[in-house]
Figure 1 (cartoon, rainbow, N blue to C red):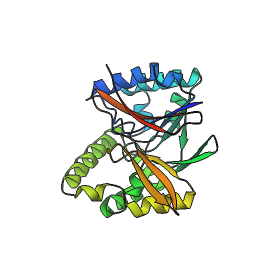
Figure 2: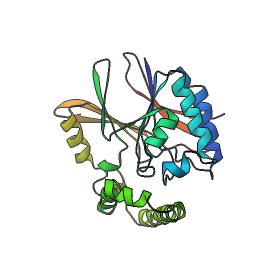
Figure 3: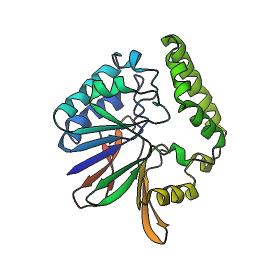
Figure 4: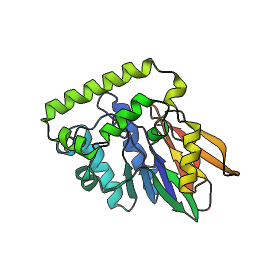
Length: 245
């Protein structure tokens, strides 16, 4: 079995090279895998299935995902802080299964915890309040009931506010809280944690309950480069970067 995990592509029409690179990734690396896990921030923004599933930019990507799923690669999607409004319309159109965050994955007897990663950034109190609001089902229902143009304007405002706020925050505040990482791994009884969100790809060695543990951080995709984690039968996860060329 081969499993691939990706996150933080932030797909949008303004950076077509990333979308083209991803479509190539589906044709090559992903087609050889048994399962592909997308761990959030797949899209830069998502204002509702009713508008974007058939969008001019999104439709070819969703069609390619459905083809991958139909050809036998299991497809899984986890919400990020940019695409938390992705719903069952997207899931049905793409062939993906929507996962909770966090999600416990077991491969060859090894338990691994999958997360987007934003819930680990507890030192950013302002963002944690925003996260709690946007994950509230009633808030989401109210937003999805708005006309599309109002939702688009809201998304633009939120991105602008986020950019301004982040520019004034210390870098360590926007990274994961080490104590929260250990606490989360203890709660789920895992020694491997995989997440994205921070755009700081790396493999961190740590200790959980006196045992060696690892935290894998996926990288964000750029116009000429992607990141994934590959797990093959009986082997440890491997963090990889690759060129689109």
